[in-house]
Picture 1 (cartoon, rainbow, N blue to C red):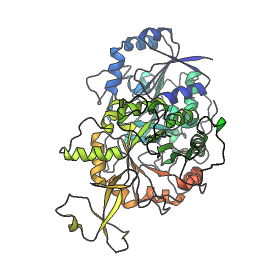
Picture 2: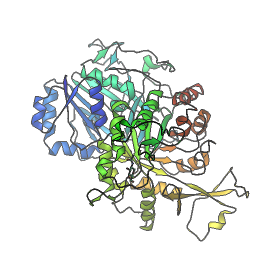
Picture 3: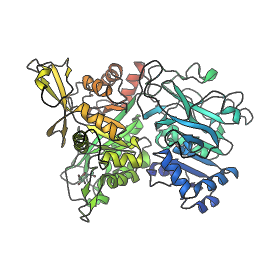
Length: 583
Ligand SMILES: *[C@@H]1O[C@H](CO)[C@@H](O)[C@H](O)[C@H]1NC(C)=O
């Protein structure tokens, strides 16, 4: 098998990248010291988290001169995410830390507001373009790339991005230095999505998380295929923006600041009486199935279902462990195996929730931090971890402490190590009705709204109380207090459930979603209540929510993810087109 060298300088979540490379028919060799760089032919530099942290680690370990030498020797180099950012001169994220400076532009942070006053979430999480512009000044002309695909990129494909900092794009500027650039637009900011020149290639998006479209890019790099005849036509269900060829501007029709409407499939996983792991909501519980040889738990179902939703076009898959405590050594948690197996075939982001907290390992009696637990999940293929009850407790402490975190919560420690985008806070609010907002005076101030969904007693004011332990315990903390504290402590996304809607198939709680969206800048995922494709349309039109999650309606086979996306597409909302690619 041909080889590619991976430079993994932070104990990172690169399992999916390794899986994607292997799927493309290549073997991964690890670079363990700057000396190893000399022996490498092709190098991939993945990066997650903080620009300053990544560049400083590389520099302290002596890698920067080795990378420079590799590049100037004309050997292939591929930087991903912060690996792209490393090519630039520096970043607003860490002004005192220099980059490799192969491109003399500095990275900026996305602004949460556009010039016209509309808003956008930061971090930017979701599926966007990487459209190549063939400028007169671009090297594409000399290299015969006009009308060809650059590293397998397709203007009607979508790619998965997750970042707060970006390389601003000014037409012609980078091209005049010989770079070929593919761009994306987020709100009113256009930025570099992919860039290449001679032996250098880099993407801001994660190709290993971008489904078939991303695998095609990885394969093109590994095979040395800078220019190809790969499809430059519209994919089924998409239209190439008419202006694409002329100026590269992407159509904004039905998009969210340029992003597609993200659809997430969620799998609640638990152990059944036979000891098999099953997905619970719906009728997937099938006790008649025999486990393999009876000695290991049957992991087939969660993994198979994740794979099914991936092939239906789910933009993300979330696993929630809803089993209560059992004596299981932490390193043997069945969810780790589920993630390892899922990440072999599912090339979109994976989130895992349940049990990410400080605990005592039953196997050793030793204390294990939430960060250590999260590390195990990341190493097994998770991209994000979701924190529930612990977030409520951390937020209570944050407010008791005068609006300050103590630095020790899982949110804070995981966010510091892996970046905000890796930390999802899962919120389970419950409606508390009052007839008059003044009823709450004198007590803790909770954010009350007037609701169109009165209770049986006709009360029309409501506040949203946070709960823990799967909704069984209600706390004196409201949803606004919770999400604002979590955002301040470093959470990168809110997974917003609604106990009153869960399993109801009545549609999402639009009032709750609008309230939460109005108080945070981080992306919000709508959850609970989806029973029909029209509910997705409704939540995207009536709120500016960033993503929507479905569970029961998919598990019961009532609708497929593809049907939801088709519905949204027909209603004029931008969704990621379905693609197939077998390397
Ligand atoms: C879920 O978490 C519990 C501990 O909280 C653990 O005992 C159980 O094995 C976990 N389940 C999976 C599928 O990992």
